[in-house]
Image 1: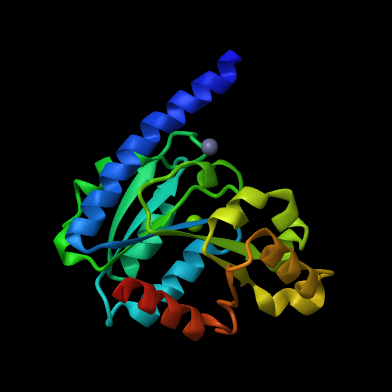
Image 2: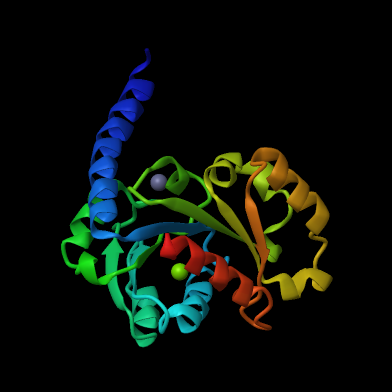
Length: 217
Ligand code: MG
Ligand code: ZN
């Protein structure tokens, strides 16, 4: 076995152990956890703001914000009136299970129904690291191009749901919606797809309803 492969296996092995511990704690405390992923600029934080506005009076939500350096996203989420913890990865391109374990020490898990973790903006390694979540979600914005599911298959295979975001921009791009949905379904036959726009509000009600159903479980 070459050294690089062995090293990667060890890193993931150690991560998975903590992820299993996290998952056990979340389950004991009755917290449903969503790992929200997507490229920088796909609209994750704006989507989160809109989602919180729709759900905050129905269930108790807390947010963990993963970012390389700033607290800009956490400040936005805080304005929505929910508890938010900022993790700065200092340049690291994904969140891992130990980071989540540490952040959760600052949260009152018993008072939370749904914990949303906004991962670092990146379509690659966030999908490789289990953080102890119940399910993963990926935001793909129309402006990123319809080729992304086939170019970054792992994140779409791992995610239970894809949000095709900024759907209002469809007429101004060459994004092939049908091809993208076909590719997503080929990669992951049971994947749930929402077409959303935080500008027009399209699809947000359906999405929030679906998420509420997940959190109620
Ligand atoms: Mg963000
Ligand atoms: Zn990474």
